[in-house]
Image 1 (tube, helix red, strand yellow):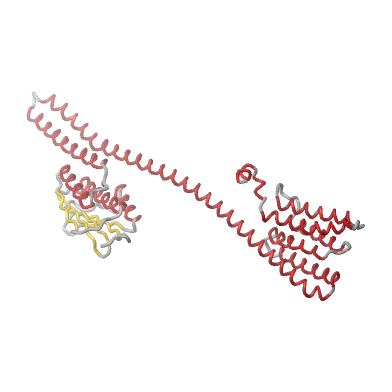
Image 2: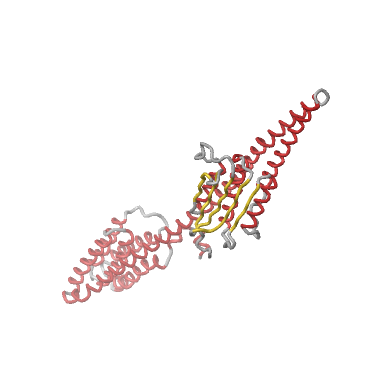
Length: 401
């Protein structure tokens, strides 16, 4: 049955709820028509035609093989006229009002506003009127309320079921949309990651071109000059070779720094203090800038995003000291104070420039990483001379002190 429904979508409407309307109509039609034809009643063919039209309209509407061309109100009006015609047709079978149960369910299902309940009220008036005419006032007093209560029960139940089915379909649509949106986000995330890697490679390429490339060019020019002067002016040639030697040492230092940046910043089995210590030692060896480090004795295990943010902040701060501070000493501290993680780097260089409020690419990256974790970054003058950068992050909620 499931395969049949998936292969032929219109058959999805063939449910027990849909069949119940047709079966109820047939349950009323069979004994009524038997009564008409067993006595060769003069109105038997009229009754047969009326029942046939009622069953036909119900079947078309319930099975929904094709969209009905009739608006809901006109459909219910036609069915109401057909039922009233059967009630008015001799010998006036009172149980024909059972067909209003089906119409009550259809009215509240097809008309999602109060219009469906107005139709049920009309069915109640018609039922009361015919029971009064056929069986008398006493029967109308006792029987009519039972039918009327049934009309409203079937109408409310059908409306609730229709709303539940509509909500379920809407939930399925939303779920599908969420799945599609999730897949798109995954694609966008992969593209963003690829773009970030590409930008980082371009940045490193520019750095190596602007630093190492410049120094190599100067060295080549100096060596060519020294080669020409080595016989005529050996002292000048020796001076130029010394300049080349100094340029090469500085170029080697910058190359080591660039290679260190390309390495994996944090290994899964390496603590944050160990990673920062290795970073400081490598920086000192590459730049000859003394790095003093002081870390809190006991630090909690931070989540990976915290470890990477702190490590990258220290890495970028050291790089700025090398490029701009003209310092020979920097102090790195990491601790916890007032419920915050504090990373501070202080140098003894020339201090902050006049345009210190304009952050470069690297410092903006630190600021963005801190903001993503609910923290902040400060750049200020070092009270002992030079400059200092502070990164303050709130303690993770799952971290025990």
